[in-house]
Length: 390
Ligand SMILES: [Zn+2]
Image (tube, rainbow, N blue to C red; front, side, top):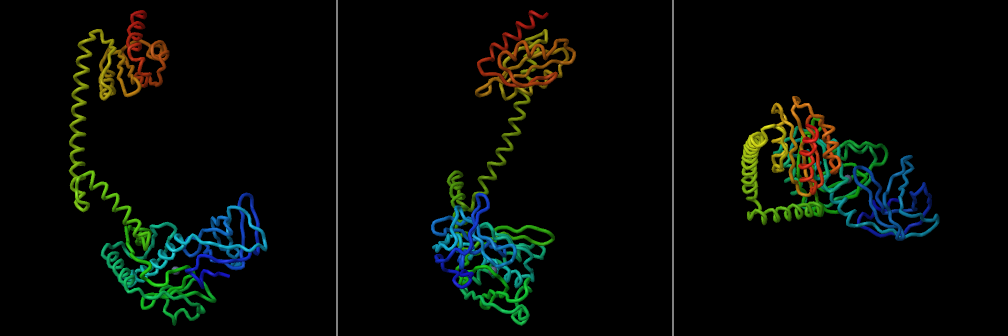
């Protein structure tokens, strides 16, 4: 028996285990009655405990026997009487989401004739897909209508009818099932077939906030939050804005200005920095060419321009060079030669840099890292190697 339909506000119940079984590490139980709502109709299942055993998931039997199956953290015994307790905070949030979804469905229909195509309410930010073209004005109007319905605080009722009566009841959507169908009616607002759980008055589902809209599958997808989850989201966003406001010494609603200023300043500084590095690399290359007239160069250069100096020297006919730079906790190196040089770069690397713990590779230009302490040894080794091989 599905107690949750008759008592959507009850969070504790007693029941008997009528069936219990395990599949590997997964344990299951069916009860003679339950308050646990199974995942169905876009609404996520309840969680909680049965005699202290965690209920991790609740499913509707796929074979449509109508049984509600509780997946448990550890096994229960058949015949056992158990006390079930719901995670009420979770369930209430699901009821708020679900009621808000009905209210928005009707609000979009009234605002622009849009129909609901699909719904997902498995996380605090829920989505609804509609068959209308994305339109910010429609979204704002529907949001306002839904919140008027919140403030009207009208009763939400449920009852069963036969599917043949659906038309005379004026349901918003034609029901997908035949036989007995459950109707959820928001007085003076909306009537729809639904097996989910809802709050008793619309006021409990507010505030309803649409946070985003986007084009989706030829229609519009909206994202919304409702009830406690809307309040929690506002709170998180407000705290974030407050932290940013403090950092920028700015009013929260004026934050865009200092952020925009910082962005444009950052772009300017970045461009200026690139130009200065370019100029420095060019000067260093000229200095090195003058300092080493034989074009066999061994030198330490600033890390910020190591690659740029290396790139320039590699294009200079006759150059063989080892450039080294201190980079925080390591030494970075560039070992390079112009194709006109006859030295075997690989042999040079293996004789000089590899014994010092070098990592890296490349054919005409070898880039890599060395331990920090190896910088001077690498410079000396390079010069010794060349004098002994010339
Ligand atoms: Zn519903």
